[in-house]
Amino acid sequence: MIAKPRHIELLAPARDAMTAFEAIKHGADAVYVGPERFGARAMAGNSIDDIARVCDYAHQFRARVYATVNTIVYDDELATVERLIGDLYRAHVDAIIVQDLGLLRLDLPPIALHASTQCDIRTPDKALFLQQLGFSQLVMARELSLNEISAINEVVSVPLEAFVHGALCVSYSGRCALSHAVKGRSANRGQCAQMCRLPYDLEDEHGNKLLKNKHLLSLRDLNLSQRIAPMIEAGVSSFKIEGRLKDVAYVKNVVAHYRQLLDQTIAASDGALVRASCGATSLSFEPDVQRSFNRSFTHYFIDGRDKASTMACLDTPKSQGQPLGKVLACHGKSLLVDTKLQVVNGDGLSFFDDRQQFCGVRVNVANGRNLLLREPVDIKPGTMLYRTADKAFDDILSRPSAQRTIQVDALLYYATGSLALRLTDERGNSVAHAIPASLDVARTPQGERQCDILAKLGDTIYRMRDCTTRVWEKFIPVSLLAQLRRDTIDLLDRTNAITHHLDLRKRENLDAQAPSATLSHADNVANHLAEQLYRDHGVIDIQPAIETCDNDHATLMHTRYCIRRQLGACHRDRNARSLPARLFLRNADTLLEVHCDCSACEMRITVPQKKDAPQL
Image (cartoon, rainbow, N blue to C red; front, side, top):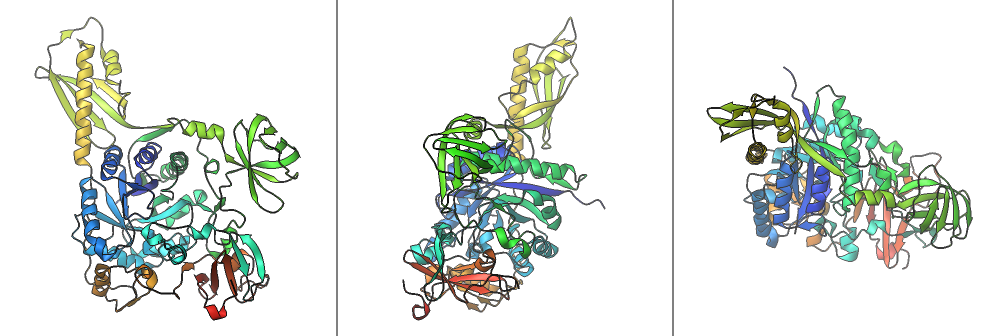
């Protein structure tokens, strides 16, 4: 028996409808988009009408639209969420991304459900349980290695989704309460205050400062461009780009970059892999992820723990952009740079000064390696320069920069007194339309002329791949051929719309047992339906979500990233530098304690007990 080809999906973020359209044009097989409420990015909400427009556009290419309803939900909001998901279903959304398991007990339409990364999927047991609950796709934790992904893939049969690019949460997703505790803004409610991007002093228990003003919790951006094939081999089928708050230029560039990489991998698979949507994308630029916003890059834990030393960028949470080259000389506004890249007027450059402050300056006039700046700077020779505003690249991406098309084959023929056109496209659709016509014999063969007229599809998504005419000896007026082409294309569009396949929600296995009989605050049980579901599946002891109760001693952040390891002070390393047993992070009036669990190779952040804490 020949195995069915495996579908590989490139999943792109979309903060709004325009970004979604561009993501699809530039090669996305699916987009994820948030409605006006209950998405994990509260600032990226969209109306139902806009989401419906995205669905109509995406489905032309058999691309899919996933709506993010992935916050925790309070009891008094359940009815609203139920209505919202009904509206999304009627807008033809392909799946709903869910964090709160209480939603599974609502009266929902038969729409597919995906388990959000906020569900904290790190183990085979957890993944299997969520599959048994009826989830059609599982978004795995960002922290997993290839071996851990492979272990999960061994026990589940639904597609696995993994992040491949973009910003990293330092905490396990869904298990960070720091923003809620300090600012009253819950990340699990889509209102993260990004406390991890702030600078902190590192102190010992006596208040002595070990490091000053460092971004000790701010991770670099994920970039797994070089791990595509190993991730597929480990079991990943959906490659997710982070960035529902990113601008459209960022999405265009990053999507196009990964489209090219995935296409290369699929082409080399000898048919074992196929693309999850249809259509070919042509670009007017060469993608380069270093030319878009990035905090410099990390592979994170994909290769295991031994690659963990360069995860954070301690000196800045800002974009470092593209490494340009080292400064050779600096005299006021005049700068000489050792670079092979072309710098243009208006580029923005950045560098770390003597105090490791990240500084920026704008190019006024560029002449090869000689740059005239808008203001004087003092940069020492040998300093690395970065391009953080790329004028030429931004100009390209501000204009139409991609076109996505569907290939179509045409057959023109005459039958029972009517001129007929059959169109068959790469999506598997085939339609025929006829117009009554009385045709005269032409003086010269007409086949090439007829096909040229039928191929004029410039205002549609279609491009002619093959054209066959069986009436080459007949003269057909241009107006008749053009009308036949328009009518048949309209029929092809309508046929594609009504034949688009929507996955249905999978049935819940009522006998499935939860991996643990105990749930902590970090499991985010925020309503009675979530509690009911867990109890139905064997959970006995349930602590409510921290957003619904007072808990001053809860873990505010649970991470696989470790400050000690980042600073070269890991207790497991015999040659490590020495740091005090107790470590604290201070920012203004916020004081946090660092707890390193070396047995699990994890870190937890808490508010220290007043009697044991350094004085504010």
